[in-house]
Amino acid sequence: MGELRVDGHRLLETLRDLIRIPSVNPSLVPGGEGEAAIAEYVEKRLARLGLRVERQDLGAGRVNVIGVMQGAGVKTGSGRPRTLMLNGHLDTVGVAGMEIDPYNPRVDGNRVYGRGSSDMKAGLAAMLEVVEALVESRTRLSGDLILTFVADEEYTSIGTERIAQTFKADAAIVCEFTGLEIVNVHKGFAWIRVDVRGKAAHGSMPDAGVDAIAKAGRFLVEMERYEKGVLAARSHPAVGSPSIHASLIQGGTELSTYPDHCRVEVERRTIPGESREMVAAEVDTLLRAAAEADPQFRADADLFFYRSPMEVPPDQPIVRCLERAYQVVTGERPALGGMGGWCDTALLSEAGIPAVLFGPGGFGAHAAVEWADFDKVVTAAKVLGEAVRDFCGA
Image (cartoon, rainbow, N blue to C red; front, side, top):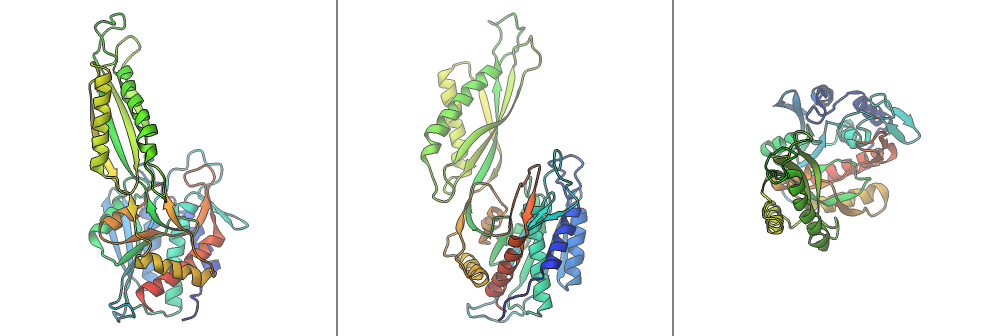
């Protein structure tokens, strides 16, 4: 097989088209456009290329689009034909405070500016270009290629949750902006509400009131001590140490009243080997420690949202396949590493689909200025195309 030809001009126009379509996640920004319009664009592209296209309605205008390039079902050197999934999210964060026009893609050298340019419309454009190049070269894969364009990665990932429930594959590549690094490990997280109870009283009656906000400070002191002591001593070679921090705090009703309630919302970042049960037990330990230090301390905790950390062994076929593809395209060995953030790879891996991250590079995700490195978008498309042909057989 010769090198799969990627059309850089077409790829750039695809990226610019995607940036022009607002797709702000409405769960993050009330009134955000959601994925409907950008999903329609992707759906039409996939249908024009002859893929079997499916649309999943997730409610309230939230949409997944799936395209399947049917394989020939022919056995390859590795045995039965293998199915590969490429995954990318359609939604972006908001545009408030941006220093550039978020939806007017500007090209300056190798940089393409706009909201979502790096996170992750560059990855989406690379996915579409892979299909274009495969169709244009009349490549017939032995196994299926499934492309999943999903909603809501920027909030609670309802899109990939649905994909994990309805599609199976032998492996997956989530085409996030990794700067062409293969990421096989990332952290997870837990969100926890801690409700501290006090006793309301007039501000002039200190003997009658219990200040819930002050009592919440007991918990915060214990939490900080735990992070600097216990958590800092744990470490993973690829992602470092776990962490815990107070994200939000709310309490009180008026200046002259002792507050009877204070809510602290906490985020705990986890590393491979840590579980939801471990985190819940830790928080209970912190509450007990605060109560032992202060008999008036009363609080309850609710671990209301959890996403697991992810680790795929480096000898997994999908990792080896990406390494080979990268070497074929660039002549160099790729970097293999970890990521501190959480991605949809964890949901796919939990569903029995070994998943890694690989995609273009850029700068300014969620920031006032965002751009994609177009040279890396081209390289990512080439590597992904080579990986598809290797993994699925061609």
